[in-house]
Length: 488
Figure 1 (spheres, rainbow, N blue to C red):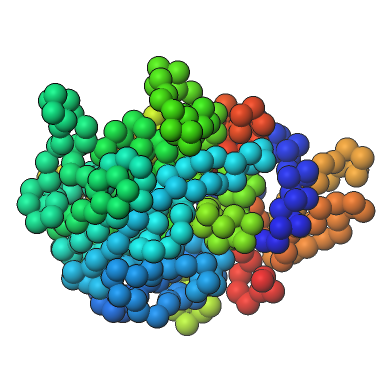
Figure 2 (figure 1 turned 180 degrees about the vertical axis):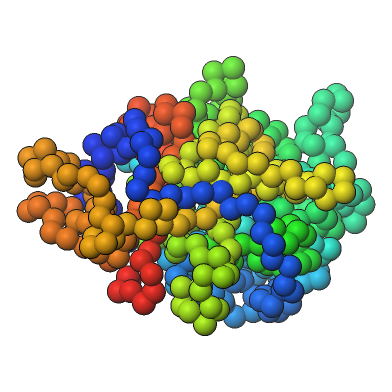
C-alpha cells in the first residue's frame, strides 16, 4: 500500500474505527472456528527450502511462495532488497537438520503512529542493520539448532529459548550468571558488551510457536526490544501446526500477531545511558509485529519503515470443504487459516478479531490434547494472551448467508446518503467481489470488492499511542473475492 494512501487513511479511519470498536453487531458474513477435520491424507506439500538453507516467505494469501538464494549461516539470509512479497510471515530458515543462525544485538530507532520515534535494541540477522522485532526463526522438529549471538551493545546480553530443554552455551549446559556478590545478572550465559559472542544450541522439540528473548536483565532488555519469534514445524509437514491431522492449515494463510509495549521514558533513559526506576514503568505505546496502526497494515518492508519490516495484514479466501470443490478448481480451499499469537509485554492482551471465533489448538508450544491424544481444543471469541504466552489458533471464513444481489439480497434498506458514513475500505457494495459508486470525496481505498474485517486489542486503552486514539495493535483480515478476480 502506497505512502500517500497511508496518509489519507490516517485522516479517514478514526471515525470509522471508533464506530467499529464500539459495536460487535452480527455480520452479514461469518468467520468461524475451524473444528477438527477428518483429513488423514499424507502430506504432499513439502518445503524444499528446509534442506537448502534458503530463506522462504510464507504469505498469508494470494501470493506464491518466494525464496532467496542460499546464504552461508553467518551471513544475512533476508533483507528488504531481496523480498518482494507484500504480506505474510517472513520465515528465516537454516539448513535442516542443523540450521545455524547468527543474531547481532544492535540499537536503532523505530517510528511510532503519533509521529514520535523510539530508541530500541533488537536482534538483527548477521551483519544486517537494526530491525524490530527480531527475525522469525523457523526450524523443523528434531533439528539441532545453533544460534550465534554477537553483541554490539554497551552491556552484556543473552538469548533464552523458553520451552526448549538442554540448551547449551559454547558447548556446555547453559547456566544462570552471577556477579561477585552473588547477585543474579542473567538467566543464561551472555555475550559480553562491546563485541562479545556466545553460541547456543538445542534440539527443537515439540512443534509450535515460541518466543526467544534476552535473559540478561530481562525486565529491561526485553522491554527494549530484544525478542523474536521461533516456529518449530512438526514432522507431519509445514502445513500442520502439530503432529495431528486436525491441525492442518492453508500454508498460504499463516500469519503472526506479536504484541509488545513501550515505556518511552525507559527507552530515553537507555539512550542516554541513565538509570531508570522500574517502579515508574508505564507503557504508553502498544505494537503489533513492531508497528502501530495504520502502519501495521502496510506492506512488509514498507520503505518508510526501514527498521520495522513486518506488517500484520492478513488475506484469505473463502473456506470450501473438500466435497464442495474439486482440487482443480482455483477456489479449492479445504483447510483453515492459522494465527500465531505471542505476547512479550507485561500485561494481558485481549486480542479480538471481529466476527471470528477462533479454535485454540495449542498454547506455549504444546498441542491441546489429552494423554491419549484426545482433542482438547476450544473456541474463543477473544484471545486473551498473558505475558510470555503463545497461542496457536485456526479459523475459517465463509459466506454464511449466501447473499446475492439478485437471488438473495441483503435484507437492509440502505439509508439516504446524508445519513450514511462510508467506511474507508467500503467498495460501494455489500457483496463480495462487487464494487459500486462511492460519493464524491470518498476515500475509495477498496481495490476489487474485497471485504475488510477489523482485529484489535480489546483493552481499548492499549490501542493508543501516548493518548492518540485508534493506533496501536490494530489490523485487518482482508477477504478476497473468488478467483479469478482483478485484485492486485
